[in-house]
Image (tube, rainbow, N blue to C red; front, side):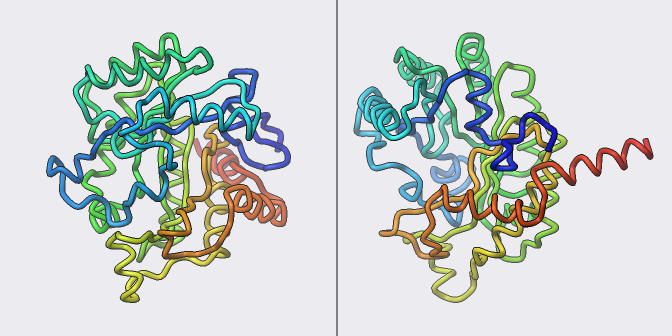
Length: 320
């Protein structure tokens, strides 16, 4: 583990460590709801949304579009100051597709978030097929003065799986979005899910190899989980969706991390829905408990993020 990017205790290049190296202080992300919708719900790209999607499963109670943005922000900052003693903050536009609006609305929301003196930047969750050039130009302009990260929900590299989940975009559209964002002063984060029906571990690991060859900065990875009110929950009740076990998930994620370039930081390794809507899997773990499940398995193996990536590079160099 000679690479200085890898946290020596975590054996992972964690996003928290990346932010601390970059800004020389503790930085937290504060979730806000900008009142957006999604082109996979309103008929622009599809209807019904993704098969697993219920945004209440990952939206804090204080982030509601009826609450003014500034109030959401103040509540989130207060929480993170108390809980983590954070010094600076990134405003995370999370719910639905946060570039899916006229550029005037985007500019108003993004710039209002940036007015707070302790906010150093924004992180914008969106889809690869919802990035108009005007939106990218706005984000690039903001990035000349503040930190900007665009979070692209890819979810799977497998076109068959993308179709099965009713995702509404392709891997090529994701690649094109990365291409258009690259070189604009914008960090790029990608979201992936593990545990789709019919997905093999090797297929999941191929995602690590693809991500390692792209100019992305960070990743969010979590298990496929069913929440109440979704079609995936209905499939679980019928017996047509069997979630991964905790052991299977941890093993797959550790394999993935070993294949992943150490240059890519990890923002998330686990998704946890509120108990009131959680259907399956029901591991009853907090985020830090899952992180240490992964870390302990890496320690047991004597491996770390990027160890297989380095080996592949060495082999490629000998045959290059």
